Image (cartoon, rainbow, N blue to C red; front, side, top):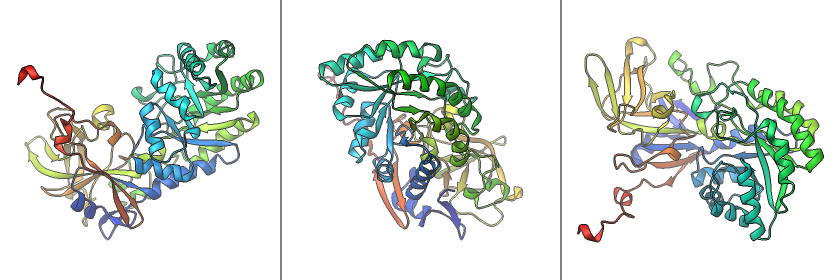
Length: 437
């Protein structure tokens, strides 16, 4: 369940009218629900309660300080992938000792920063990385906690650009080679072999691939615990969300009525995995991002023009691919609804096949194509749903367009958690060479 709903025909985030936010703060505008962020974390945390565990939210999904503070307050750890994310987490009040550091290309500076801040563990992805971490830890006179990322060579059957668990991907070390890597790592005196980690991909909506991967890696984790004394097994993230709602079928309560009856929930996820994990006696880490943030955010955009060509009905809005790249990058589906729901909007006779497009000079600058939508006109506002993950974090300044603002809502309170970027900020760090003056 999510905290965006229609009340008396108006879209609300918790107890705040979304239209009032657009009027006050302009558009494009990201709006996040504190209640949804918190509840999604708490549901997953509770589902894993039969085992010692730590939920480590992935800031790469949404790294706004307000979002990070919300999750830190809920007790979350963090799955970081850069030195910048580590510093963001600390700035938001997160605990470095509850951070794990993933990624294939950690720099010396990032490793040094993480060691000085006292992170929980590195998720190392190659032997050269282990050697580098050991070297830096020796120089700092520390022992670096590490877990090797296992590539289990299991196809998660998700989008090609977000699968990570096969040998065609750049991530981790091949399953068959891992025990040898631990043998060699054990000889590096400044490494503490703390755990083992895996991650097979993102936006998985069935538990089967998780179960298959866990069954494969559990015996390995058991052997590593017996031989090297590892303390934890991280099973990664990847739990998917519903992007397609029931609104188009006439049910205005779309946030309660996902089309897929077999939606993967924390309870179903845990029911399959806990029996496999509990006998290990290890601490279990999970690394969700999209599951927590995805349906906790929307993007508001204003209709600038409606352009009819005889072949197409183009709804041209003020948001663009630089504000929200997922449709252009992944051809992803996002439900699009007007902020005001009129009687009969769901009747086909009141809808028109539309392409919702942005102003950027690229044919890929679109949010949907040939979708039946209620008729809208200049000045109307639309909401792109399920935009809380991989939205603002992937924004750019392409076409010299400023970043949108972000608002966090809690109950009847709403606060700007990122000011709209001014155009002058875009070139404030640039200079013209003296020889061109």
